[in-house]
Length: 189
Image (tube, rainbow, N blue to C red):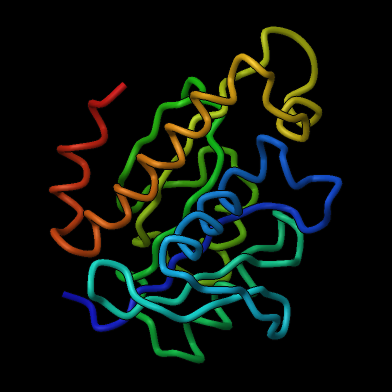
């Protein structure tokens, strides 16, 4: 088991983006920090906090470089705290999952997500753990506009449930391992 986990939620800084679909990674990072009674501090191009998840040391990170440049801050903190790629957990929005669904996995490509692509590029590897948070796909219109829009009133309950399951998934990854988290959360509605 890793001695230190780096848990990064992806999003865009600023109040304009705070409640948008693209910021569910930030929302989950906030929920994790709140559950541990932590407050984020500013350092370099990130907001961060240090605490514990399921009894294991963890860093919580919210890169402040905008989504497409998330890899720089993730790499900087991984290097600074000597966190191995296998102990990095990235939480981010996924349009290929319906609102409220989550998927947990290790490795793979970016799936067209530019924040994940930036992390792959800057880390030089793909073996970090991903917690994909479903935001749905637009029925019509531009995907970029869609992910930068807020959740509808009808989706807020599903969003809250998804964030709670995301928190539980990360706790399970840290405490019991990735396989246990995949078995528990990848088939859940």
